[in-house]
Length: 182
Ligand SMILES: Nc1ncnc2c1ncn2[C@@H]1O[C@H](COP(=O)(O)OP(=O)(O)OP(=O)(O)O)[C@@H](O)[C@H]1O
Ligand SMILES: [Mg+2]
Image: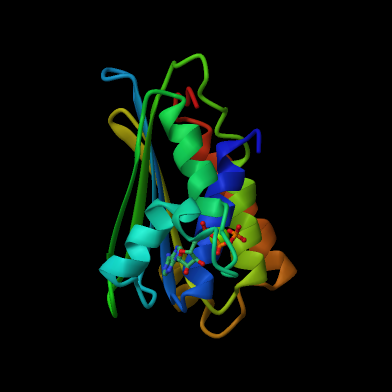
């Protein structure tokens, strides 16, 4: 995976499989502290401490017939090779928050890639779920919240082509003034 936005798509997919109705995606670029932070937070079923331990150490279970997932380990590797780390907090019945940090200017940090495209794909494929996408660069930020759009749309599905076109345009326009480094 050459772009972090594809890792984000993968991690958000875990949230959807876990039954989340709301997935929050936060990209935060801090040039002063040379830090890129990606957060994927959901209100899905969460994990027990035992499940969480298994996700942290996927190869612990390779001797069993259990499938070993790659989504989380790949994201962790991307963070660690760029001077950062991956932290997962999860509570059964409440949800899961995956936080990955990176050295913003680290030579081995993969580019963020098309984050707006990732958000667009998630909304289009899961129009009944809610997504919040916030992109912060130092003091400035852009936010898209499908809960607000849904209210305004008054029953028109988010997946309507016209609506998706508006969402894509809104993201492109909203991200433009940010001085993005990622
Ligand atoms: N947001 C989440 N909520 C609940 N459980 C999660 C969440 N994210 C991961 N998990 C659990 O951790 C496991 C490992 O996730 P990971 O993405 O590494 O692999 P996978 O989804 O099983 O397979 P792959 O991503 O390779 O298709 C998941 O199968 C799931 O049981
Ligand atoms: Mg996965």
